[in-house]
Length: 380
Image 1 (spheres, rainbow, N blue to C red):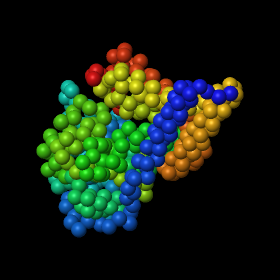
Image 2 (image 1 turned 30 degrees about the horizontal axis):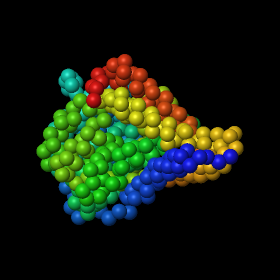
Image 3 (image 1 turned 135 degrees about the horizontal axis):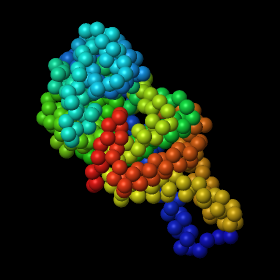
Image 4 (image 1 turned 120 degrees about the horizontal axis):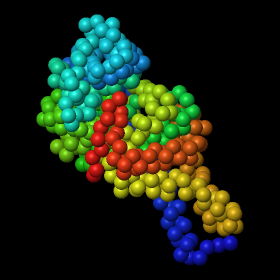
């Protein structure tokens, strides 16, 4: 059974749109530069101050600090700002002796997000010409900082950021996180940030390096004090001021275990969906996009088989091959097993639940909770 001209035209247009959306992610991944340990070192070696904001990080902080201490860079200052930890975080820092400086975060002022307050205090105490803001769950190759500084110098950049390899342990992490990485890559058009004149802006809060004069001219973390997604807002403000930003994929220089279990991953993705700036319209648009580009395409082939419609069967088969092939390839690209990429419908479903939960919580005015602290939502 065929289709009338009008429905056939709509089917062709829809199929093309889905293919374009999938193709954009492939294109962006293809143009993302890769930085590795064999990258040339910098000619100059100014002092770098690494600032680690820590709140109940005893499970990760030791390995993070040891890999920072092992850096093949001659002038690295390491500052850990503790945000009222109730576990063994402080003891882990003290065990490293004078090589790591421990700062006790002052009481959190009204209107500040905890991480931003910690980073602001760390930057204020730092003595480096360059500031490295990094998370406690990141591990570093000994040449991570050397490679980053050399690349920053060659690019004449004001701020650079790296995307680490994401370690996964557990079914849901392996299914969801490659899909999550793809969403971030596509939404922020990340590698286009490296092009002159581009308006794309992204800093990865897990690891970003900035020239102190540029950071201070912006107003530092005080300029984004109330943002949970402070790295995104800082990138946008730096871009508005004409700063030169660069991003690279660095799986051999950095690795991170973002979440420890499915519940933590769910709450982390909720935090990243809208931060404290809630927009119901944006959330509805996000839901529609997930459905139209990742769920509905999977219904065309079975619908065509049931209806005996050749155009639907052909369109559905093309989309099945494209979507499954793309997600398997993407999983392999981020060093995950391809079989988990083939389970992307589960990842899309996970995201649908997360975005729906975000929408319900936002409409109810529930505050965002992260790291044991509540932050009120601000409608946008």
